Image 1 (cartoon, rainbow over the protein chains, first blue to last red):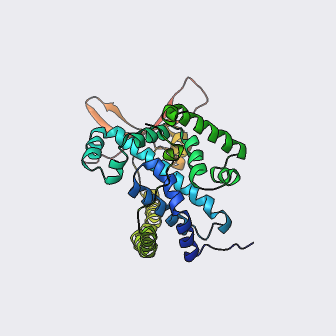
Image 2: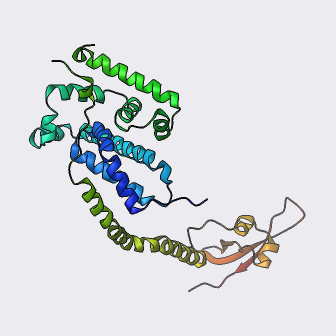
Length: 172
Length: 133
């Protein structure tokens, strides 16, 4: 059965709707605003490239899946780069720190960043989608291709870890 | 210092002009794609050229005498066999040996082993070949 193709205006509407939540999700992988925006845009370019093959009703979950995968890959390659060239990265982070990074250097932000960074990928994917995407567990399960129950259990596991790390600061 | 839960996951605003940047990239994409296709177009020839080259090489090497090529089946069958029938049919080379006929005098000869019934008898037919000189 022929399905509706993603048009340019539909893609732009989708961008306006998803830009902010997807940016927030991706940002928690790369911790760089410009890079996060670039990854969000790359996500939409990928969607546009595959517009003939995607269904309109699943395009939103596909956007989150592509965005998180791109961000996870970027983070992984950056870690590898840091491993092979640690000194250069350290120098760059001090010399070329942008305003966002400087803002991120306040104590709370650093503690939160470290706590989120310490989450395993599978927990991070769930907690970020739960916090920012406004999707239901069913929709998140579709994005991550896991059972609905797994979404709930992973979210609880992520929250437990964050509370264990941030508990004293949260007054819990 | 107390931390509120909303500070753990603050809702940040993305950098401005995101849609304009995306539109610009979407407009650029077809031109870039065409450039990439133009760049990659010669690459389509490479497999065909490689296949043609390989076929030519195989055809030439099949017709070219190759000293390094292994013995044929016929060579293997007739090797070291001094069978007169094969020699007569031209399927086996006549053994060429140097035989002393007279003291202090040698000639190139063709020695053809002739089959006999008695296993204790070895019988050769000798042909003296003209000297190349």
